[in-house]
Length: 102
Image 1 (cartoon, rainbow, N blue to C red):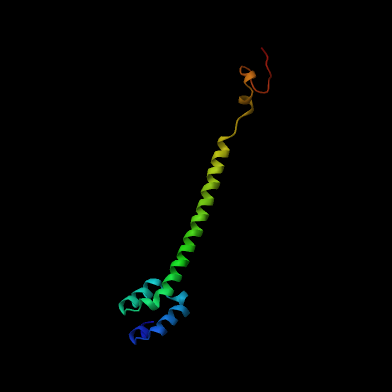
Image 2 (cartoon, one colour):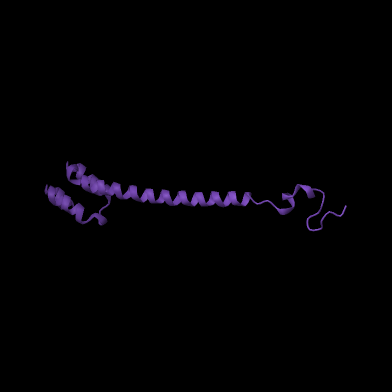
């Protein structure tokens, strides 16, 4: 990349950004393009990087949201439990399992 930037080979710089996409850190590509006024040639690379990062964040957000919903559902399910002895108000004085001995 530096060779192409130093020799003002703009098209080669853009081709190298495309070809070596997985090997180039976005901050390095952006800085080189900015210093030599080649931002127009780096823009496709930067757009692709931004798209990839946005996709990753969206996937993480969706995964986190599903996990939070599952935890909330689990928490609310444990609060819905009503023991049998509290369900029948007619047997308020009786002990569960012994019937009404009075």
